Amino acid sequence: MNVPNDWVDVHAHFTPPTTPEERRARWQAMREECFTLPAPYHWSLEETLRAMDRDGIAMQLLSNIPKDHAALAASNDYGAWLVREHPSRFGLLAAVPTDDPDAALAEIERARTQLGADGFAVTTVYNGVPLGDPSLDAVWAELDRLGATVFIHPDAYAPGSMGRPSPLIEVAFDTARTVTDLVYRAHFRRFPHLTHVVAHCGGALPALSGRLGLLGGEAWVPNPEGLTPADITGQLGRLYLDTAATATDHTLAAALLMTGPEHIVYGSDSGVPCSTDRTIRANLEALLASQVLDGAQIDAVGRAAFRLFPSARARHDQARAATTRHDRPGGTATCAR
Picture 1 (cartoon, one colour):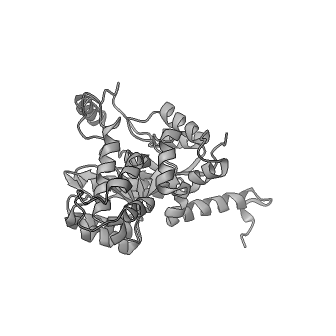
Picture 2 (cartoon, rainbow, N blue to C red):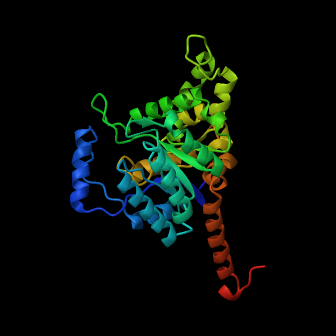
Picture 3 (cartoon, rainbow, N blue to C red):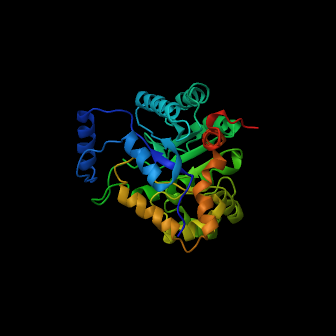
């Protein structure tokens, strides 16, 4: 079994500082939605770095998408601060408020010019507005102009269903519904310079991709863009999928058929109440023991996100080069040529 070394985690969360009272209020609200967390959750920078070192993770791309615009901006500010404090350990996927095109465009510009964001993060359905809503065309056009990488995450705090919390099952279908809607809007064809990373290995999408290819172009399916089965499978094949809570071969096998091994990227889903040290480690071990990827492919999955975020890669490489110079005879006085 491989051992991770110098990997990058594309799916990691954080929480700006909160008071015990705020954490308790959030905990109680979650319990009302069937999310029976035994105690309030508290994100810790120190514990995050410890776990990264333990698991061989060089860098995390951090994301957090509050539903309130002011909280979202404050969260992006705090994420940028974390990157400034730990530039070789963290990158920022700045949250975009996709319920308001003007606010979204303003936050994209602020994140790009003031916060130094490495990429962007969006929610499948943000305050009732899905990513395929036509009002967002100008937002997608701007991100396409920037050649941005966009991380698509479901709403894990949506109401529970049938007595079970949303992160268990519903997030997978939320993801599949939203991305399918984007496919039928020819989104991935219309914005060819965008790179999309979809959380949780695309949720239920890989398992449904064959069905979409088989039936999706039939006359009984509304299809205003006139998509052929090849169009549908071609758009799906462009997606990158992360391994957060989905690194078992049950999911990877379908994902590989949909998009290929070079489009699988490592994600831990750390930094949220539904992930624990045990589940993060078990998911990582499942990936390392995969029978549908070989050893070289598994290691490539662990490093793949560096290709998608060049500014984060540059900080990582700079830190490694500095460490190498320091470790040479003569220490920091050694010159790099």
